[in-house]
Image 1 (tube, rainbow, N blue to C red):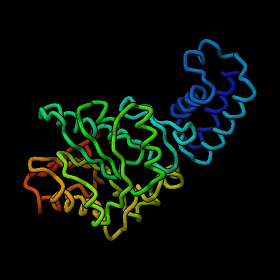
Image 2 (cartoon, rainbow, N blue to C red; image 1 turned 30 degrees about the vertical axis):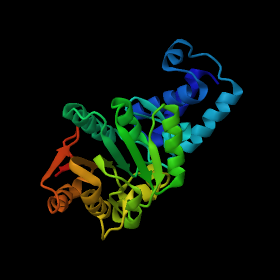
Image 3 (tube, one colour; image 1 turned 45 degrees about the vertical axis):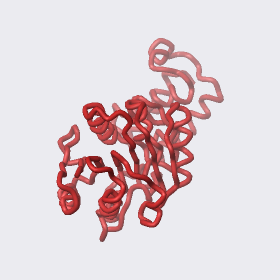
Length: 284
């Protein structure tokens, strides 16, 4: 099969799941990631015959896509803040909104003039947040925690391949006795689980069937579970004048802000590029 024929056939097959534009882009991405054929070659060498091994791997990938497995898990990589990171089913696929959270924190660090701020990332997953922060703010001292050792294995590998020095620890953050293992910080950041289980049925199948539920969902009766813990933790683990930055469920943004206003004197809801109430900035 030629490059052009594969791209056309795959684009057509994927129309059952994706829009026409998305299907074409994904077909091109498969060619690049799996067969090493970039978009320039797709245009200039359309009649080039795909090697049998490459075609076999490509067809396996298409079969995975057709049962809603995310492209990033198929290729094993995802881009985040200009860093190519390893991902698998042990970690969430990094989202563009989380890149916005990183940008907010980077601006804060650079404008504050802090020489070597000490940061903690709670629920690090792939390590995308601390790696991006370390790349942008090399003098920062960064720690990251997660309950999942499988996730931390991915995060450590990503830190190694991106040449970033980050201290990772396996900690169940909901277990307050384990807070004793952690120091005080200038900045605490988290993109915690915040989706009530009742919303699971409304999410895309590629999310619910493949991404780790523990990193996504909270009990219906405790939608602010992690934020309540973060608010308590920071009272003893955030330096005076320090900041907390968190990603939010937009429907619970005002409730989350009210929770922090009980303990902190400055709480600000920030919107994402789409105008949704997506982030919370907290300080003493």
